[in-house]
Amino acid sequence: MSIVHTKIPEVIQLEPQVFEDDRGFFFEAYNHQKFAQETGIVANFVQDNHSYSKQNVLRGLHYQIQQPQGKLVRAIVGTIFDVAVDIRKSSTTFGTWVGHELSAKNKRLLWIPPGFAHGFLVLSEIAEVLYKTTDYYAPQGDRTILWNDPDLAIDWPLSTPPILSAKDQAGKPLRTAEVFD
Ligand SMILES: Cc1cn([C@H]2C[C@H](O)[C@@H](COP(=O)(O)OP(=O)(O)O[C@H]3O[C@H](C)C(=O)[C@H](O)[C@H]3O)O2)c(=O)[nH]c1=O
Image 1 (cartoon, rainbow, N blue to C red):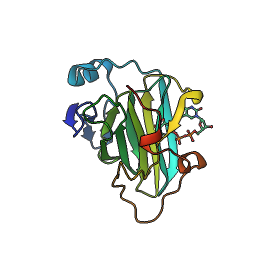
Image 2: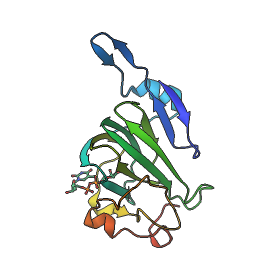
Image 3: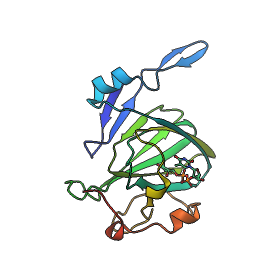
Image 4: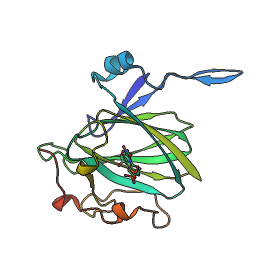
C-alpha cells in the first residue's frame, strides 16, 4: 500500500498493492499494521458501512457532532466523487474541501479523520461504497452541511441537479452549522 497526500494533510488517499493473475486480482483492502506504518494513524474501526446508490445521487455532507467518526472509504462498484470538508474551526484549513474519484477500477481508499464532513456524488450508473468508521452511528449527533454551500463552493462534477435525501436538502450552511473546535 502507498499513500497519496491531498491538499489537506490529514486527508490521505491510499493505493493498495493489487496482485493480478490470469484468475483476476487480489488486494488487502485494509491491514491495521500497514495502515499505521504508512499513515502514522492507529485507527480503531468499529463499524463497516455499505451503501448502494444510483447515478447522480449525492449523499452528504455528513458528520456526527457527538462521537465524531474517522472514515476509510472505497467504491467497490462504479465511481464516486468523494469529498471531505475540514470543519475544525481552529484548523488552518477550516472550510477547505478535497474531492477525489474513488472507483472499483482505481481501488483507491480515502482516509477522512474525525472533524470532517463527508459526502459523495455517484458518477457511474450505480455505485456501491464501503467505509469503515472509528466510532458507532450516533443518530442524535448526525448533522448535515449543505452540499452546495456557496462558502464552500465544492466543484461537484454535476451535469444535472443531484438526487438528495430530504435530510440533505435541508443541510445547513457551514457558517451556521455546529462545528468542531
Ligand atoms: C449512517 C447510518 C445510517 N443508518 C440508518 C439510518 C437511516 O435509516 C438509514 C439511511 O441513513 P442515511 O440517509 O443517513 O444514509 P446516508 O445518506 O448514506 O448517510 C451516510 O452518508 C455519508 C456519506 C456518510 O459519510 C455517513 O456515514 C452517513 O451519514 O440508515 C444506520 O443504521 N447506521 C448508520 O451508521
